Length: 127
Image (spheres, rainbow, N blue to C red):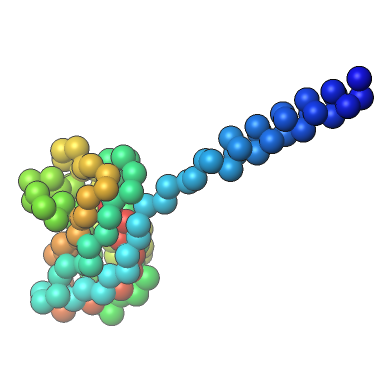
């Protein structure tokens, strides 16, 4: 009787561990960017790892006061792009929704424009 109870408990524990162990979280790829407007206005490409229909941008360093306007674009289909997300020294993070469905597993890049010339911004981009 005791032996049967131990086996049942052990089987339940193993089944629970299998379920928990097989769950792998998916994290969106985040890339660092270093842009200067005008001039070098594009980020490196990043793979979209989830189905969330927003992209995120965070500035970590600004060389002067100004607003950086950011747009996420699908690398293979430029008609798939986001609305504009704006960041500045007083508003370091922002996000914006995509205008049409942005599939996961595809590459996206960020393009930028600025409210002032020679704005240099370093930060992170997640499509």
